[in-house]
Image (tube, rainbow, N blue to C red; front, side, top):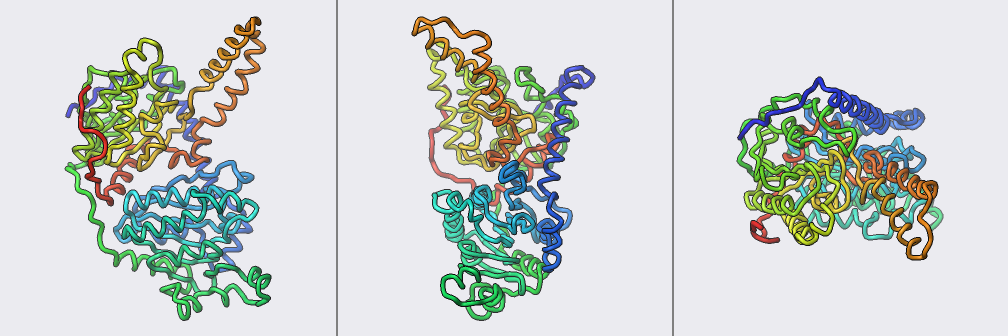
Amino acid sequence: MDVIQSKINTSSDGYRRNYEAMEALVSELKEELRKAKYDRPQKAKDRLAKQGKLLIRDKLDLLLDRNTPFLEIAPMAGRGMYDGMIHGAGLVCGIGVVCGKEVVISGNDATIKGGSTYPMTVKKTLRIQTIVMENRLPAITLVDSAGGYLPMQSEVFPDIDDGGRIFYNQAVCSKMGIPQITAVMGLCTAGGAYVPAMSDETVHVRGTGAIFLGGPPLVKAATGEEVTADQLGGADLHCRESGVSDYIAEDDRHAIEIIRTIVECLPPAQKTRLPMRDPKPPIYDPKEIYGIVSREFKIPYDVRELIARIVDGSEFLEFKELFGPTLVCGWAYIHGYPVGILGNNGVLFPDSALKATQFIQLCDRRKIPLIFLQNINGFIVGSEYERLGITKHGHKMVNAVATCTVPKFTVIVGASFGAGNYAMCGRAYSPRFLWMYPNAEIAVMGGEQASGVLVTLRNDQLAKEGKPPMTKEEEDAIRSPIIEAAKKESNALYSTSQLWDDGILDPVDTRDVLGLAISASLNAPIRDDAFGYGIFRM
């Protein structure tokens, strides 16, 4: 493979302005992440300490192997919702290493409304379960939850993607042979009681853990019986009498010791083997990405410069370099794993769509994971390109993205607009993981374009009615709210709050995050089914 020869001038004004803009965004990101992780009411923390419970982050520190990474998923889900106090949707989730095995961990944050389940908590749980199933990773759940947040019960209970789907997925995971281990470290009530009941093995903490379908207040109201939480669903009852729980723990620390022992006894994963080579860092400083990524989407940059700071040795074998130049495709290695990379260098034309289709299908046949670096305004438009079959050729690319069977990973490094989002493996196309850069935006189209379309439509309507076109003031009255709404609802912080992504990345971490994600994905076999089309050239 050839080493990418960087042409970036790190002393230029453009580089400096880009760097400063990204540095400011990363600084804001880190502050938002700090709030999401650690801003908790002191009263809530004191309450847990009085009960002898550990904070969720302390539980993770004990559970995870020392000096191993933890790839947290959606740490800012729910940001700005529910009075801005339900950080991370009240749930901490991610992929980590326990006793040398890659696992998915999910734990309630009991300092946030007692670990109550909000609509975004359900959405985040379902996302984590999808990660478990797609990547065949053992699931560890640390339960301490007061149950569904009743004022919003209609949004967490009845639909196909609401709370009941959690237990459906648990049943499917069991059928798939995926280990599920649960520790009951606090309340585990109502429907949530099925989480430990449907797990392979359940650890129950004496004195603080309690499992019941109906809590003491509900039991009293329904039957008149007066019981304590421990009498109704404590560790001794469920370990000695009901058999719901399998191991009794004296406290949170003891429960985590038991979990680690259980995981240690699990059979080792039969990971998919890829033709790997020894990893080596890029020859260029990854932090230079700050100065490469444009602060404004209308200012182009060469995605090869980004690739050069992500892949091993900055080496890249480019596929069809001279054909379809607005899309860069090629092979590389990331932390020793072979990957196929697609990165945008402009809008998608018929030739770039055809190139992508062929490249994706080559990677699929060779079982090489795919990485999409999204910075896309969409497909080219206009009568000439419609005659050339842009819709037809675009469909081929979308079809290839949808039907390929290898793990796919998407990083939105800039714009993600319109059908370009689909073609470059947006969320709807089931990448194993999807992240955004702090500068990234996602929308049907940019605010300026959307407002321009509406102004044009209105002026066309006025012309049909024989009326003069709008004045500048009238046009501005249409444009301004559209642009403001786009600014608010298309940025990365809004996206991550809605769980449209798995988190916002500091660009410096791109390579390491991708390496961790690829490794996790290889716990599942790469499917060998014959979906889609064979390789076709044009």
